Length: 307
Ligand SMILES: Nc1nc2c(ncn2[C@@H]2O[C@H](COP(=O)(O)OP(=O)(O)O)[C@@H](O)[C@H]2O)c(=O)[nH]1
Ligand SMILES: [Mg+2]
Image 1: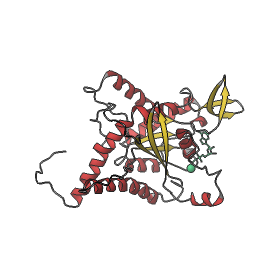
Image 2: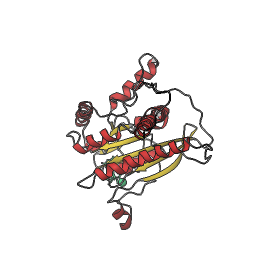
Image 3: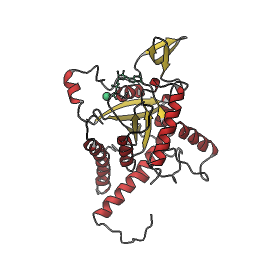
């Protein structure tokens, strides 16, 4: 599968939010120190994740292994209640052999699918059952200026078959705009060369309206999103802005001239939230389910269904 559900329609206001609000889960993966925890706090607009440098020694020692740490925050996005769960993966990529970390993360994602399958097969549904499927995985690429590392390629290839993967360049303020553009271009060349299945804002030329097509093309053109994280605010011209301060000036998190953070946040939590959820259910979960049941030797009576 080159792209997660290229035949899938995007957008579309089909679903009503429940009383509890919409449920959405994001997983953050990438090397230590590339700004994941800071990004999560910036995304949630709350210090939900204790950063390494703030944490006590015990916590830091714990961070040396891959921990899968889900945190849920309730957000209000333009009047829409959103229950956002962010799964941090501290310790990823810190070992010489990262296969166990890949397995842990894949295991976590597939475990949520197992739970759904078990729930679907019950005669009486559990009313308190919570769908914990991961709707999108943000893969942080270090701002090295080179290209993808072997580990990045392997990881995204493996996980892209199970979850919507969106590549992101962390700490984008460590590169000049020219360096950043060249780096983005090289990464996309690698992604296409190695046929890495990422979420690339799929649309249907025939079914989708012009506006959707244009928006998706624009977002696709930004891939991989460059992000800057910060928990600090300063007042500039009477406006409170989240930024990183340097002796030569400030870089603003929400300024689209400085990085793609605001566009990424809007797309995740607003414009493409339903599309990411739909692809998770209709394509990724469905593929996993079919593979699993065929492996176990289940057969439909009316087999003849073609994929
Ligand atoms: N220059 C720069 N530094 C950052 C950025 N985000 C985080 N940092 C710093 O990088 C270090 C590691 O960040 P952290 O969020 O703990 O990374 P994690 O290990 O991936 O969770 C901290 O000192 C942060 O203050 C960023 O966007 N730009
Ligand atoms: Mg961290």
